[in-house]
Structures are given as C-alpha cells and as structure tokens.
Length: 178
Image 1 (tube, helix red, strand yellow):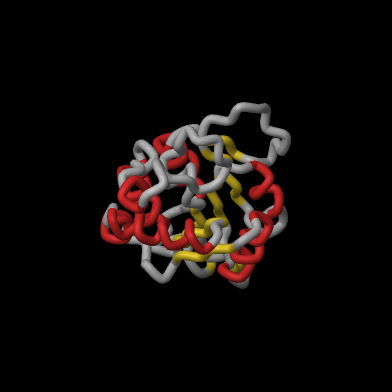
Image 2 (cartoon, rainbow, N blue to C red):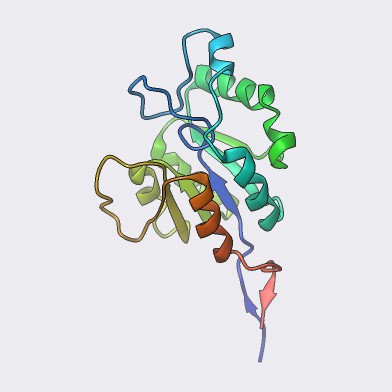
C-alpha cells in the first residue's frame, strides 16, 4: 500500500481581537487603546494568549503565520506592538511569518498561498471566505450573535482554543501517513 500524503499542519492566526485584547471603541478590526503610539503599546494581549499560543506553535512545529487585515497605520502599530510585547520571543513565531491585507476576504488568498490547514479568527465572515481553503476554522472570542456557519468551531477563550486545536494536530503529523 502506498503512503497517503497528509498535508503539513499549518496554522494562521488573526491579530486584532485574537492576539491583542479587544478595546471598547466599537471597532471590528485591530484597535488599540488611545490615539498615541504609547497608548497603543499599552493595549494588553488577549488573556491567556501568551500561555496558549507557544504550546500551539510547538505542536505545529513553528508552521504558524499571523494574517491580519489592516491599513498602513495599523500595520505599523501592530508591528510595534508585537515588538514591544516581545511577541516573537515569547511565542516562537518567526518575525517573517506576518502577513497583512487591506480587505478581509484577502486573508483567504494568503491562506491558500501559505497552505494553511487551520485558522483562528474572531470574524465569521472572514472564516466563510476561507471555505474550501482552510480545513479547520475556529471562530474566536465571545460572539454577540448566533453562528450562522455550523462548520466553524467556536472557541471563546485561548484555553478553549488550545484544547480544540491541539487534538486536530497529531504529533509527528508532517509528511506522509500509512
């Protein structure tokens, strides 16, 4: 019997309202506390993120990318926030594994280019664009409404995300299986 190719598990993570805690400013996108850069840098990480993401990154053998929708100003602040919080060192995600796009639907294009098999995002519409591209889609955080797409896995916290993502990635899952 010939081996069956198993796609290498590869994870994508949204940044705003997933890695960075949401701010009460009414924004559905990456947002920061206050208007100054100093204020932006003081925006906290999402609770539990620094405890869970490194565990997930290890399971994915560092095949993890950040994919976020943001304009140039928010991209710059996001990169500075990641540096300020020692994100790369604390999570073991590579600095070059960060992608930005200007439209939410374009995240699916990045996922296809990167061959992502899993994605965590706080927006159902973004995850719907990934249908047929990303096999395991996780809707993160408290949701104010009923989930329309029942094929999404809902995860309210990082602890729950870790418990639901980890079983989907068997140890040594890279390459081929018999």
